[in-house]
Image 1: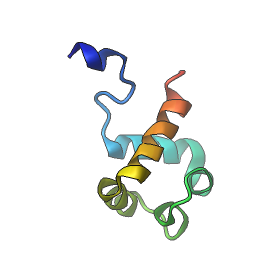
Image 2: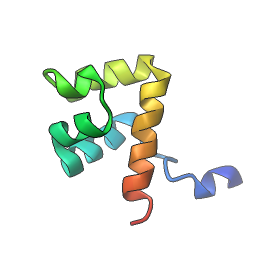
Image 3: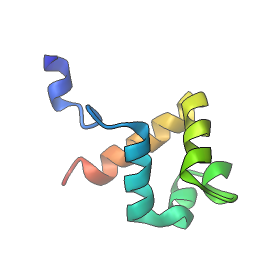
Length: 73
């Protein structure tokens, strides 16, 4: 458990991370920052979550953006 103390993603679900990013950036800016179809073509939380759960590299990009955006606050 000590390892998780400094992990900014600890206790956050992928859905919560995505919702916060969409609220902060909006779909257009998020799609610009992370160029994946589920953010650029008919974006929705559900379709994006489905894609991110199956695509580790995309999930990593979302998590990295979340950390860069919110970890400092």
